[in-house]
Structure formats: C-alpha cells, structure tokens
Image (tube, rainbow, N blue to C red):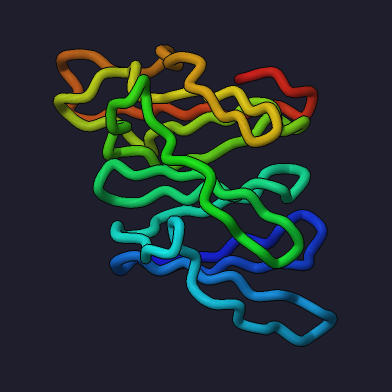
Length: 167
C-alpha cells in the first residue's frame, strides 16, 4: 500500500510506496508535476518500506516512517528534501507498529503513534518529539492507551486539536 502527501502550500507532492525504500517528491506548478528524484538519506537510498509521509504545518519538514522500526525527518527548502536525522527514543529504535504522524499546528511538537497495539507491546510505544529549527529531540512517551491482558490488540493514537492541545 502506498500513498501521498502534499505540502501545505501545494507546491510539493511526495508519493511513497509500500515496497522497499521508495519516496519521491514532485514539484507542482498548476496542473504540471515534475519528478525530482527519489528521497535519500545523505545520498543513500531509503532501505525500509515507506508506509507514511507527512509534511509539517509550515511545510519545512517532512517525516517519513516505514518498516524496520524506521522514522526519519527531512528538511524541505523549496523543492529540495534533505535528510536531518533518524527519529529514535534515546538512541533506541522505535516501536515497529508506528503508523500515525501528527504535528502540533505551530510545528514545535511531533507525535509518532502506533496505528494499533498488538500483543507484546505496551501503551508507552507512542512518542513525542520537540522541534526547534533543525533541532529535533525525543521529549517522552505518550502512555495513555486501551490495553489489557484480555486483549490481543488495542488502539492508541495521538493527535493535536487545532489549538495545539493533545487529545
């Protein structure tokens, strides 16, 4: 399964595929799109399945997540997409169930949350990151979820309301 994400100003489209390492930006000018080359990490191809990609509210950041416990954030300047850093939890890989990306409306916080929980994962597998310019820091876990020993799967999600509060 693949998908797409459009930068808030409508000038850039990212199409990603659910096969190994594919995410490509396209410049949008009216009804014309122009392929700009695959997104890379410092010149190296992405190596994990890309399952989601979301632009920050200002369009200057792009978060890409995928299989293999991978999440990365990229800087976006015009039509140039540049790798900034892998998103980790104090240097550790993130929960492989991550599927949801949400930015605070002012772009200063980012939530990565599982699409669902499965047996063996607890509700602390959602993460929040602070963002200030090109500085991205792990800020903690989000621990509220629906999960008990009688459930094989539960649901968790993190999102921001329009005023920037987590709900």
